[in-house]
Image (tube, rainbow, N blue to C red; front, side, top):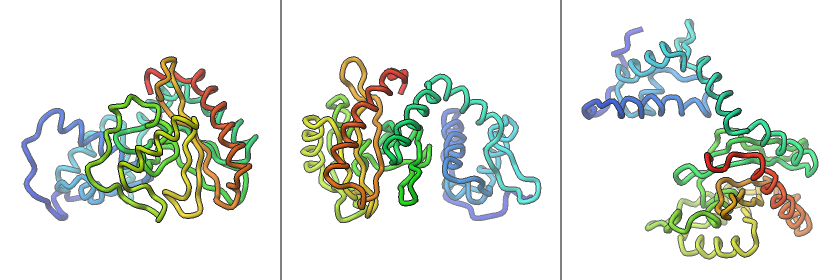
Length: 263
């Protein structure tokens, strides 16, 4: 394969060691939601030339973090990612957390997820699916903007006050019910601090609701959040109250199972 073929972008800035690391980590991150990518697709996502993308991917292949299909020449995650993933799962006690989520999903009949805030997104660390045909599942590694997530709002409400200063611009809308004004979000966070749970009423997806509680450390600071994702058709007042109470007890269970200082 001729790595120099393909669209070129603007001249690249001077290479530095940290820049190379950041680019390599970005490439690995692309595979959270993609099973395979071509070098051209990777170059487009990086905003760099195909030749630069090829150098990065070849280095990752040599280190075992990527693998390349010999026929299609597409890249996929390699064995070292599986090794690191298992080590991280053990280090963060995510297997124990998964067992807690599995039990909750079986008992309540709804999908449930554990997430943390990463920049302005909620990053899902673990999830358990509902057994019902009509359900909404979150994939491990998926992301949702904080302001449109019950888990995100639950964490923000109990995070250090300087964690959220409010945006200077309008927040992006996903449905007619998405909170788009920082002042409105601040008001909702106050309500969440009073109630102990956060709601998402079709704010990210039409027809999907959620209820979440913060996973608090000993000082009462949220380190993570856990929430149920529920189709609107099953989210009546009684069900909302039931799942709100279960989310709070579930959060307490996870606080005991997880190394909160490392989330």
